[in-house]
Amino acid sequence: MILLGKYILLIIIGLAGAFSVAGGAFSFVTMIGVIPRLAAKTKTIKYMQHYETAVILGGVLSNFMFVFQMRVPLGAIGLIVYGGFTGAYVGCLSIAIAEVLNVIPIIAQRARLQIGISIIVVAFGLGKGFGAFYQLWWNR
Image (cartoon, rainbow, N blue to C red; front, side, top):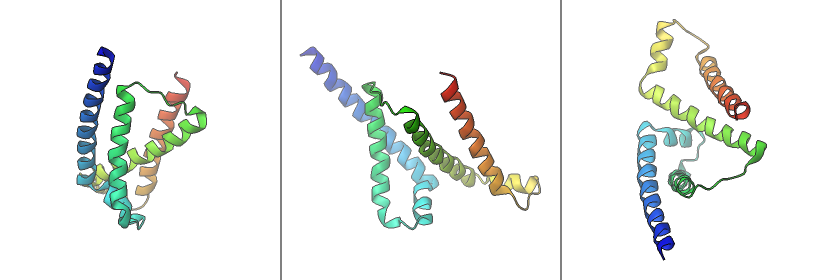
């Protein structure tokens, strides 16, 4: 009976945390316009509600896995796929934040860059991705 109460309490705490994290993350991502911008670029605005649901379910599911300490054996290929999607999301989020802060135009103006800004941004992203992959793969 005590074990059941413990699990019920963990479920309540986990769901409360998931709702608050998902709500905060979604409102932040919506505020800086990552999801609407990606939907507009891919011409899938009609699926906006599905994107919102995916963000909320991702927060709930990851919080559930964290609270109950669940492990997902992905293997090397799964790790590469997961890292690719995670890196793409983090890259989109960081670019959106940089655009909101108008960092890229200021840096381009100060460095007197006319062309090559996209190459620099891609190089930053690839460097970050390869560095994280190296750290996670070889520093176990």
